[in-house]
Image (cartoon, rainbow over all chains, first blue to last red; front, side, top):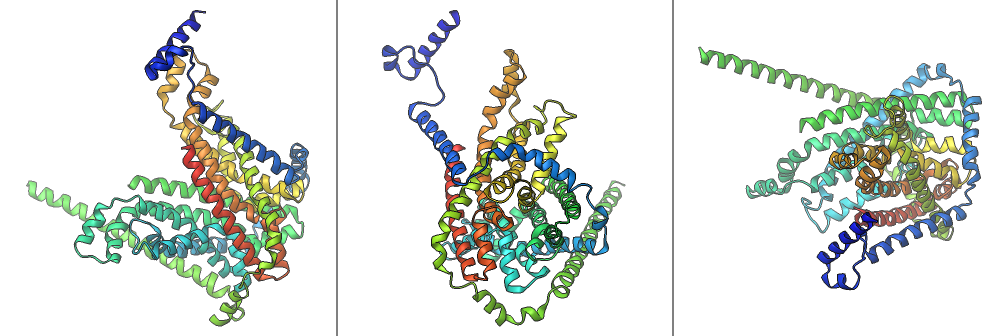
Length: 294
Length: 272
């Protein structure tokens, strides 16, 4: 009872402060974080999301009953068919050579991608772009297109055009890295200080010199971190690029999956996972070190 | 006396600087050689240059993709909607599944540091490190063909990112408000509900929207390994060697991703 009184006094004081005319007519007004139209909009958004979930479950014919039996089946499948993994298969010389080639593919793809994305991100950042009317939309469009098409689709396209092998994989990873690094690079450029640019420009430097001496020194450290992150993601993609015809470990994955050699599949998956985890830990360590250099 | 010591110090500093420079140049040289070696192995030796031929045949190869085959546009509507829905449901499932992972994997609220913390962390790493194609392969063999394995694969892939970023933001949450709740006698659950969740919910939702944007991209290839969506149409066009149809499907992907990017931009602006 006492608490209630206290609260009512509190609320009436609040309303007095915020709206003196209202307090006379309705002293019992309670406090809420969201006022009337906002709270209604929130509930409408919740409702729309919920209705859309139900509608899409219906539309896609999702067998929800299978969700809970799935775990049993997944456990069964792993226990009976995928265990024990055929580790000796992954220790073959051929396979290890493919692992090495996967690493090289990821490395080269990232390198080319980063080299290309330096000028593209220069074009695509609004504050330093050489011409806002032509270069900016072109740069944006290239980054957008490279980013929207998934790296596996790039692989398929280049495999069709260039044939099987490492080369289409490298080019697909280059496209992936342009989209990935280009966007982060240009975001980094758009956050730099403009004073230095003006200073260099006032000495009569041309746009390339402005980029080299005013923009690049400011973003160098951040770009190094982004490059390592790009390499990490590109390597993750490289491990399965072979599934669609580019070389590397993915090729072995496809072969064994299609022959239903499940023990070998699980061994290959184990190598992929362990390699990616190693590369992720390494890249996190390197990025930490670089960000400390700042 | 002092001048000579200064000179000695200077010598030491200069010597160290020279050493650092030498080491750096050595590293650059090693990197350069590595690049050359990789180029030799992957591009020169492995590639069948006769098959590629000259520039002309490459251009002819690209030319097979043009102009886009507009006759299949009418069949694209349904898979496009499907892709959109796979991404949406996958993100929703990821949001739900990420909550316990966040709880386990955040250093300051995890129920028991030696047991649940490593579990949460390893789920995050595993989910992020396995590519979505591999997840899709696993789930297709577990639940059969259709949109359902696509949803599961997409959500498994995005749990890691959502929960990692959220757990990191929980770890550097403002400790004073937690202390205030503790001071009025709140227990551990109340601290989480009234102290932590209000602080991290914008980060969580913002990242979920960001992941939804990326998940549309991931959902477009789910069909290539047997989970529905636009990827299935793409696969069909590929199998029929209808390369112009492939271009049309890619254009549809571009459209749907642009729409998703615009929606996610405004939604994130509204949340944060």
